[in-house]
Length: 204
Image 1 (cartoon, rainbow, N blue to C red):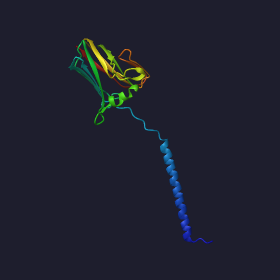
Image 2: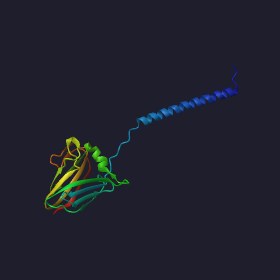
Image 3: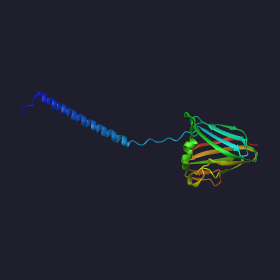
Image 4: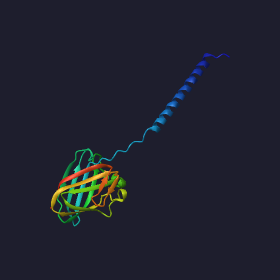
C-alpha cells in the first residue's frame, strides 16, 4: 500500500501531539506531587510590642498606677522602654488590668484577648517583687491556665508598707510545669514571650 506525502505528514503531526500531551500529563503529575509534599506553613509567634499594667484602687478608681513597657520590634527581642505613672499607697488594695498589644499592625492587635487567653493552657504569667512589701492573689474569676493553674490575668494586689523597689512580670509560653501556690507563680521550661522588670516602683 502506498502512503502519500499528505498521509505521512498527518501521521507525524498526530504523533507529535500525542507526545506533547504525554509530556504535559507527566509535568502536571510531578507538580501535583511536589505540592502535596511541601510542608505546611509554620505559624509565627504573635509579636507583642506593648505591655500595660494598670493597678486601680478598689476603693477609689481615681487612684491608679500604670506601668508600661514598649519595644517597636517586640518585647521578646527588642530593647524596651519602661515608664511608671503614679505611686502606690500603703495599706491599699488594687485590682490589676493587663493589656498586651501588637502596634506594628494597623489597627493595633489585642494580643491578650486574641491570642493569649484563647490559648491559656499554653501560657502562664509569673510575677515577682524585690524591695516592695506587696502581696497578690490570683482571683477566683481568673482564667484557667496550664496544669490546673490560674493564668494570672485577673489578680488583686495589696501595697502593705512604704518603700521603693522592682516589680517583674514574665509571660511563659508552653511551660513544662507551673506552680501558682505562692500566688506570684513560678514555672519551669518553655520559652519567655517577655520578661520585663519595672525599677523604681514606689509605695508611699
